[in-house]
Length: 345
Ligand code: ADP
Image (tube, rainbow, N blue to C red):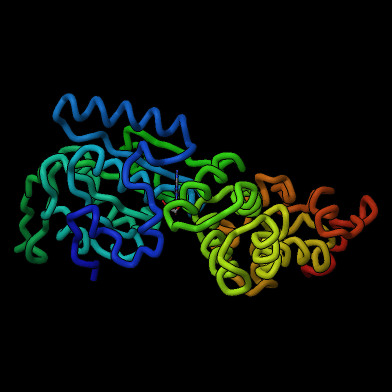
């Protein structure tokens, strides 16, 4: 059963530990300038026309601001938002409470939209196109189809994997935006603002240190900031100096590139067990005892972006930069893939 629909943006994220740090309006958001500008134009035009905004698909790795955009947009437009998760929409009937509760020009946000089964996806098509749903009552020869007209609304979908969305669903979104990792400067700005929000006394460079070690991801920057704040309070007088920030993050095993112990274990596994690759992601996931999805969605995007790992047609392969970072020597040329194959069969 889906959660009861929630109609007010303020109440929309009940167990949101980040709630006090999450920007409330698009103007409070840092970075993603191009996406921000395009969405701003669409919001402005829709508000001027008094029409619902076109459907929007946001994709990108976790923690980059998909939910934040999806909750800031309705607030900027002065409309309500309902929040659902693709993972809990198992059958079309699970969507019904959300669709029938839609208010004129309001927003329905479906997180992890790629996890909706096909039957739910197909049920959404007429809702997205004509603001109408077809409900089948009864079974067999007695079955009747009722058309239910909905109020005009905007669907905002978020996904970590656009590749898993069917083309018909993808094509029904007027705007498709990809969120990318943040620069150190942008993250530093976020950390600085949030230190102030949390009323932490801090040294300017400490924000940069936290930003540097946050893998380009605001959610991680916020988590690391909270940890550093706690560390400063418990181990010192509460003031966050650069040295305190470094010690706090070192204690979590977060290195100067922002990699955590799990990231390094991933790199070390490819180096040690698979001779540096190429190796299929499933084999790495099995060895690490992790779900392939977790590796693909959460661990790999940053490692690929920082070019520590490359994806080849034959699988993942470590780069020289990864060996440098791990402080080990790469295998002599020609030996890498053989070692990988020997261990796989
Ligand atoms: P996603 O939905 O992509 O997983 P969220 O929108 O939940 O990510 O973002 C995680 C947290 O990071 C938010 O609660 C917010 O505090 C912070 N955050 C995300 N994007 C921004 C941004 N552009 N500016 C400032 N903070 C941000």
